Amino acid sequence: MKSNTFPRELRLLTPSHFSPVFDRPVKAVSDHFTLLAKYNDLDHPRLGLTIAKKKEKTAVGRNRIKRNIRESFRLNQDNLPNIDIVVLARDNIGDADNAYLQKQLNKLWKKISLRCEQSLKR
Image 1 (cartoon, rainbow, N blue to C red):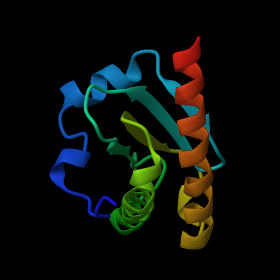
Image 2: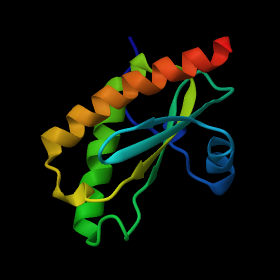
Image 3: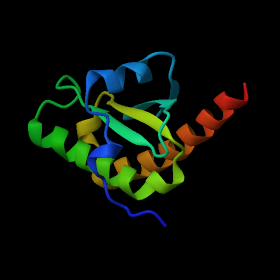
Image 4: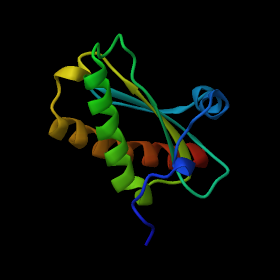
């Protein structure tokens, strides 16, 4: 069993890490999130976050959303294939409570995994 940590290796940090994901990604969408994913050459998934000020005005709100996403990813990383995922916030995300965000994210991790596997079969 892998450890449920979130070290630096599991993060998309630089623009060169993010760029390939935006080029023809696999998408999964919910009320508050859009996930973009693409396979990587590593043996683990990586996560990148994009929470725009336009979607959530306050820094406290943006940080709360990022904490929720990172925690959900940390708990679900063992179930994800070796993909790079960029999470984009959508409108009215600040109005949602933490439990609802977690529920949406859990569904999206499963959906993006399934869609990535299907994209390989094409």
